[in-house]
Length: 139
Image (cartoon, rainbow, N blue to C red; front, top):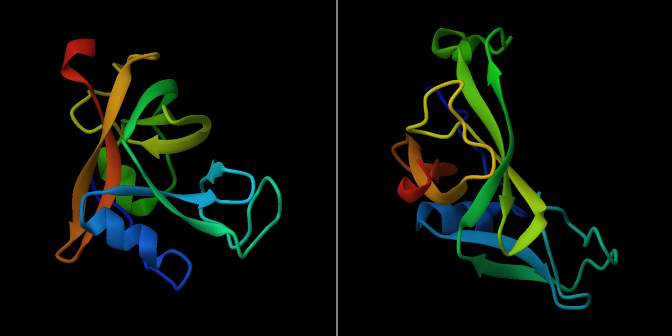
């Protein structure tokens, strides 16, 4: 399925560099000791900007919701319809969610509640993106 190619900026570059090294980093605030995603210039919880750093997470989660895109309007994805769009809750912090197409899972077969692991897909010769796959024992 065609994926959007991210264009890192100064704020997001550490995240995308880690993804290209097959690691998942999440912003971490040393003041309030909270993780946050999506990436933001200040902490969502305490508004500090100078206390934000990065923390590597294990890349495990759970499917908390899923839909199937049957009639999406994104031209580059129309040929791939129908496809899954799942919401993944991160084990280290269930308030952090990612979206995934669930590579390897057929449309309409996304198992809500299943455990998933991050994987990294190549979208261009120099760029990976995180996706999530259902753990084999869950299928």
